[in-house]
Amino acid sequence: MAVEIERKFLVTGDAWRTAPGTRYSQGYLNRDKSRTVRVRIAGDQGFLTIKGVSVGATRAEFEYPVPLADAEAMLLLCDGPVVRKTRHVVVHAGMAWEVDAFEGDNAGLVVAEIELASEDQAFALPDWVGAEVTGDARYFNSNLAVRPFRTWNNGG
Image 1 (tube, rainbow, N blue to C red):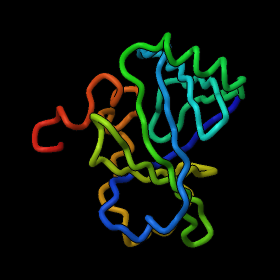
Image 2 (image 1 turned 180 degrees about the vertical axis):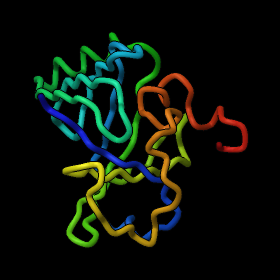
Image 3 (image 1 turned 90 degrees about the vertical axis):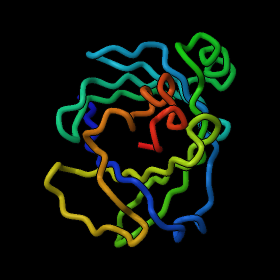
Image 4 (image 1 turned 30 degrees about the horizontal axis):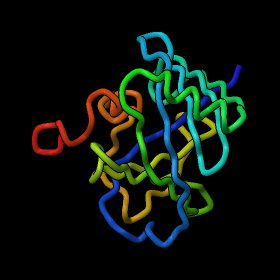
């Protein structure tokens, strides 16, 4: 089984902005408590992803490439609005960090994620990383589609 172990943090600084970015558009075909089915366009590539329930920083994840035209058509079938963001990959202390700068109703939210080999893997935090939000469901992209950042009271 494919497994994703990921930790998520708010971004507080700007040093990551020098990394090139890729535009993402993603929507959700299914969001329930036992699974999430996502369609994503990253640059000019389409993907279909199925994710299981998070237990700590770990969950089942299955991702498959799909033709771009199919991904575009599937986005029209999604529940709720499409989440748009630009993803920057920044290498810090030998580890790749994915920094997502959200757009639209989620503008102003910037989150950094790091994928790990195990939940207890050690890693160095960059200076531009702030509070950890791994377990805070508000920051799940699937939830940002239906309860965007701009609707939160005082941005939190």
